[in-house]
Image (cartoon, rainbow, N blue to C red; front, side, top):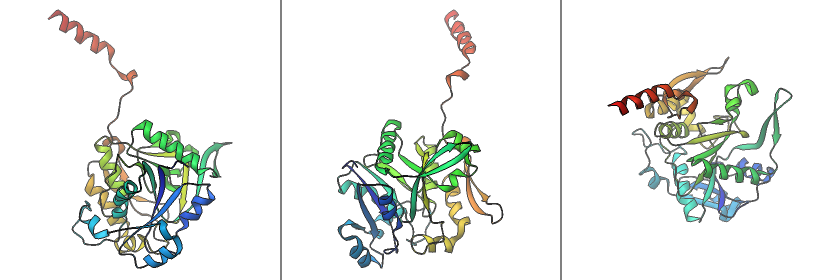
Length: 295
């Protein structure tokens, strides 16, 4: 893996359960990785015992003072501070690119259509996947590029998303350039808050459906953000995105038997679009040109 890149694994309270490390190794990742913790983590010593010099700690209170959390709460049990601090950490490490990862990934998979069905194949050469995503990041000029998640694949190969192959969103895993930082906003649902507010401004946030990560369901694994989600519930979580982008986000329901509140983004009202040349009204343009010449 290129030497100007590293994986930053953001974690809290799970020193003995950072699944992402083994998942990276199983997927063939050979590059550098670091464990990012805050100075309010009671398991600091255990992290350092297990991961040694790979552990990087930051001051949570200092980062909180310069972060737009979207409310007046003093609660700091949220990942947004680590997400924003990651850019400063990557800069101090002398990196050009890095990927932010959560700590609970089980594996990485390729996705493809085969015999009319969705085929999942375990990634064994993750270095090449990440190199390709870095190339796309540079070519596209995007703020960040992410891997798909399980929820992105609802409907399988017949879904509209699969036909698009590239989504105007980025959640959970973020490949970034140090010199083009993402400013995450909102105490909870920070990824959605960020890509909708950025999308309104014309920034590019992408998810590729060629590769997917698998992780434990939110609210299942102890530590991390679990307690915060249990305290507030998905209704509060969703409303942060409504607060930041009321013109294009609303509260909706997700699920069939066990429904829960979830954000719904109206993409036609969110991101600026470039209209294909085939829709240009050439005749109207020619008529107006002739009129201007006559006058």
